[in-house]
Amino acid sequence: MKQTDVTFGHRESVRQEYEAKLSQSGGFCAHQLETEFGYDQEDQTAIPQDAIDSSFGCANPLAMGTLNEGGSVLDLGCGAGLDVILAARRVGANGKVIGVDMTGAMIEKARANVAAAGLDHIAEIRKGLIESLPVESSSVDWVISNCVVSLSPEKEQVFAEVHRVLKPGGKMLLTDLVMAPLPGWLRRLVALKSPAAAKALDRDRYLQTIAGSGLMNVSVRSQLDYDASMLRGLAQDELNIRMGLWQALLTLNRGQLTSHLLRPMVEPGIRLAANKVASIKVYAEKPV
Ligand SMILES: C[S@@+](CC[C@H](N)C(=O)[O-])C[C@H]1O[C@@H](n2cnc3c(N)ncnc32)[C@H](O)[C@@H]1O
Image (cartoon, rainbow, N blue to C red; front, side, top):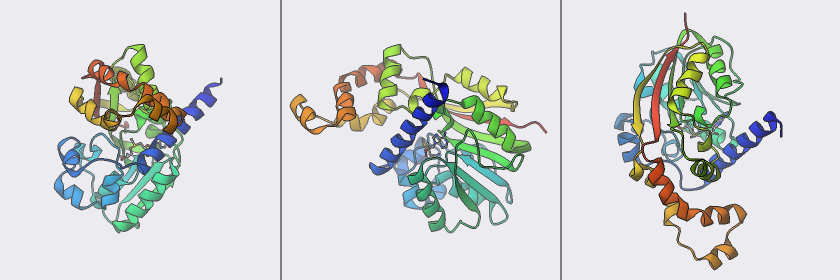
């Protein structure tokens, strides 16, 4: 199979995964958003509930730096618009925020949430790929992103695009998932359960990829290691399903059935992956 077919296939699985997540119960509760992800109460009251319910990030990229009024911001993989809305409130009426996402259902939600927040004169949601951004070169002061670049099989290309669209001296504030090398069977299990998560790199390679794009002063501002109980929380829906084999054979489709049969592997996998998965906050700048 050609590389382009593999990349296309992966992107389609990621799109389907996020469409499915949207149609399930959705993102995070207010307490989690504050304690684990760094969105304070003031941030949360400024956001329509649907943007909170449909958020799938791993930390607040805006908690890392100050956005100046009148500045321009680009959010890579903006999802349902949570960080776009917060950024728009910070840059104000003289600023501009662009959110880019590839998933139709997310884009519709983001546009509706931006409108509900009364910010559509500042924020615009564009359909596109982070590997080929629908954004002019040297046009934005900040690139932000929340748990998206790890999903891309073409990270060099994503950071080359970040370098292209930032103004000289512009800054990147990014949160993302990194994963230490895992045993082969566990990687394959992760890939089956979540094609998106399967593309995460280890931290050193991730940082080298950013530096390789020409961005400078690359630094990790903070790191949250996921222990077994946090990973268990992420896999909770799965662990809660109790179903006998006959019921599973009669009621589940092929994908669900495979997932169900692999369920006994989830708990051993969690114990092996504990503290090997982390969310990091990364800062970098484009040279002047
Ligand atoms: C983990 S969710 C994060 C969404 C949002 N940043 C948040 O914090 O809620 C990942 C998002 O990135 C989008 N995405 C993944 N790969 C992409 C790509 N290659 N180009 C554009 N969007 C992408 C998905 O559609 C999804 O909305």
